[in-house]
Length: 590
Ligand code: ATP
Ligand code: MG
Image (tube, rainbow, N blue to C red):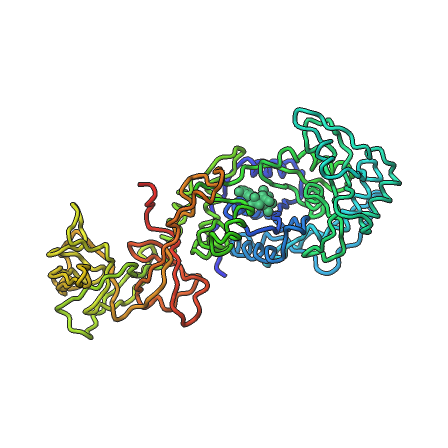
């Protein structure tokens, strides 16, 4: 695999903090993690977090673990585990894949006793691994259980019998302190016994919980004896059917970070009030190794885009889009299918930076980066999306005039290919106007225009059907205006694209546009009311025949039209389907 360019080293407050921690000798090395919950597919927002976590590992010769925070089996699925793993593999390949933490092979190291206490040390990852070996919080369920027992023994956790509704009532509100649960003073012995029986499956869902014993009057609601474990009699997609109690996210997260030797645990701003709990849990266990620290940054929220797996799931379930990989979705699978290169996603994430205030990012910025990346990388081809037949009356049928076309003018030494000019060609219907508006420099009756890479043509005649629709445009080719011919320098105002009508392919081309008509669909009462009815138009296009060998990994610019990629579902030998990645210009700015 060829190494992809690394974006220039970014700088932000989190990187400053990491540098300061290293300078102060607080850590021997840097370990970060990207911790998705496998309850949906990754989206553009996650790209920021992935690039931040893997980027910091990359820049500091550290590692970054992909860890599934899979503590809620009710909403999770292996489908999501596999999709997320594949997305990360694609997104960081050739850039930061060597920073992936490698899961220790075989059995996990036995529980060790350090300083007379149980420390469940995980062997540090082997550096240099280039495969994605995800970690799972559910692999730590035994250790998390042992830590919970330790918290009970220390008088820092108790089993509570309040119903979920009563637990909520006792919690109070931001203005009103909570009240102690009537079960808060249970003895350590009773708590140990009840917790063991919860684990053994003696009680139904919701009958009991394990709670931390912190402070029901704390102004921080997250410190009002938050739940650590709840009963759920369901099997787990990764851990199997061994468990009927599951740890809550906040409890599992900080300890998973600790177990993996994470130094900097980076999350989005809504976790600020959870930080005290993160520190409380770790601090309550007297753990022997250095503790991880949580730092928060603002989420990425691009305009005209709906993020959050929950919202995207609704679009999928209600059939608004064709699936998680619909190219109109901001999911990584969708973007990839649309033809967005991984490098463009990474550049966008890095160029939008890391801040501490929430705000929206203009999607035009993403589109700018995307066009810039594709302009550099895409192979130029000729295609006609809305074809109209044009006959070059002075060319005999069967004659082929070979023209030379440039593959990518952005290359250092651009290569060329040969395309066929024939008596019949297709041009874009809107490149011809029978009654041209002012300053119309394309083809009009009696007018001249250049066929790109070929020659100048002159429009002599229009043929119409009985209903008055134009069926054919008849022109004369000025063959002496071809490159290398005496009149090659002749100037005309317009140049249009075309394809040979006898040497071309039919293809389905899907023209995607933004899915929503308003900048912040997520802020609407119902985002289904602001769907863009024109987010997908399908046309039957005519393509230059060299596109027959295209693969989904290729990036093309159809000249004058935009950037396109072969759809991943095009079967070999079947009619080609292309997706429009993006237009050449921002048509929304007007
Ligand atoms: P969603 O709302 O889409 O479900 P989430 O935050 O619940 O997102 P997780 O699976 O928990 O999704 O996300 C994994 C990581 O990605 C978390 O650390 C989270 O903070 C981060 N993340 C999620 N959305 C964004 C975003 N829009 N911008 C930056 N980081 C994000
Ligand atoms: Mg979530």
